[in-house]
Length: 420
Image (cartoon, rainbow, N blue to C red):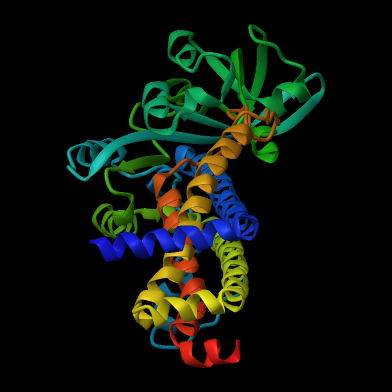
């Protein structure tokens, strides 16, 4: 114990003897840790923001009926051509309806599945918004406001009015912000909607919706599912989409295949629908880690250079230590301890300044029409980043101190003293 205390004291004395250089090395580590924590927190915060925009508005599994060419052509039913090879050009889709068969039964079955968190039915209808003599192409989504709000945060994107007004006010509509701007509609106005069948239906505007995707907001609006059925003249079982939220998003691909086979319909999972987006998030995270690690390695080289210079200047002291009974291992420990102290001091200061800088960024106003739910720059304060930063700083400084320490431990005291 006494020997350890003596080694620690010698390391502290050598460190303070060159305190300016040691301070520069510690500041280098601090700067690296600060930038590592801040950069990673900001980039992952941005990824979480973008992921949230997708995950909040996307079902984990979507059940629907896709438009596809007829699998069996009339030519193949003709006995005259049975057994022959027929080449049919310009194959057209069949006349199957867009609604799910037995949508009500499927909905009840999904709600009883323990793997399912919830299901929100939806009806998608092509319409025209009439403004004066002009008819604008549009898309109306008939939804259950309570389910849509609970599972897909629908209310967070309603900028004027309330999502619940769709259920409270008969024949009401929440317009996309782009649609509202084009038609110059205000909350309380009556807008004329034309269906593809030619029916004209007046709907009362009870709010505006802004998803952050301008092209979507120019055409898309929302009504209650009952109003959508009236628009299309359908019965109470008519549903075009079933949006499924799961307890575990990772099983979405397997469940999509299971549901598609079991319910004889088309199914799409969130991973498949957003594969390109997830790739972009992964690339941004890799870049952030790469930049941060590079900064820490550069700081390690600074510590290495300072310890190298310290060894050359302290050759006499090292020789005296070895001549008075200190082993090469003891000398090795002294210089590694110096590196560790620099790393710990710089790392602790870096974590604090990194947190403070992240807090400053988190308070900077960030207002854009593309992201209506965001008011400041996003920052992720995950403790994992701080643990990784400090661990990597210690590893880097230990490695930076090990090579000079190994050189110091091999100094021959006789040759040094004789040379003097």
